[in-house]
Structure formats: C-alpha cells, structure tokens
Image (cartoon, rainbow, N blue to C red):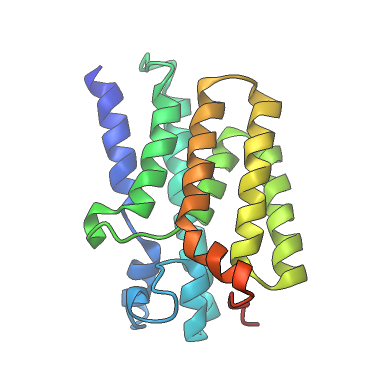
Length: 199
C-alpha cells in the first residue's frame, strides 16, 4: 500500500514541475504568469516570439505525463501495484500540472500533459487526438477550440477502446477538468473574442 501511495505522490510532484516556468527561467524569458493569458503553457510562451521555448515547454509537459504513467504500468506486475495505481497516477500527474505545489498552485490547462498520458496508455488514440487538435488548430488558428474538441473526442475514445473501466472514468474526469480549465476561453469563444495562434 505504501509503494502504491508513493507512486501517486511522485506523480503529483512530477506534474507540479511547470516547464513553462522552468524553460522561461533557463532562457531568461518573462514569467509566463505575468503576460498574455497568464497561463503557464506552450501557447502563452509562444507569445514571447520564442518558438524554441514554446516547443520545449510542450515537450516537457507532455513527457512528464508520459513518463509518470509509463513507469506505473511498467512496474505494475513486478512491484504488485494495485490495479487502481496507474489510473490514480494519471490523475495525479495531471492534477499536479494544473495545481502545482512548486508554483503556488497556479498551473497550466494540461493539454500537453494529457497528450503524454494518452501516449503511455494507448498511442493510436493519442495520435488520433493529436491529429484532431492539429486539424482544428491549423484550420481555425485557435488553440483553445482545438483543445476543447480533442477533449470531447477523448471522452468518446476512451470508452470505445477501454470500455466501462476505471481508466476510462479517470480519463473522463481528466477531460472534464480540462474543459473546466478552459472556462474563460469558452466565454471568449462564445463572444468571438478568443485570441488566435500567432505564426
């Protein structure tokens, strides 16, 4: 039981590392909390005009989701982890990203981290959802709209591939939290005021 809880706690701590903040500090860019949308994510970092920083933020946030879940799945049998550990780890790393203990609980929206989690769980579904995001992001040039549509597709995709299982319900909760984190974006979308992705 202790090792189960240790995996979950470690996942939360890993999720709490905001790569938007880490990369910005390393590259001497402004704190992403202090400009643009105030969201510490790759889209906001891109507003500095530094595409490398934005790409590194995206990669780091995705990798922490992937690594946390992949490690839990890899050691599940050998360490006799409970069947609920991997779903709990998935939720913990995402929760850490949106409410990071290292950054005064002011985290990002979690799109990249969810993508990383999905690649660890089911890479074909993950690729499909990345394709959905890209189609809408390129077509409408609105990152939040693409993320919201991908989150809705995630709800359907998980139950299609995994059925009525704990991991499906866990990812459904994550998808709903992801949508909730975009509540401000939804309001702006309805008003036609949402900003577009800068090229």
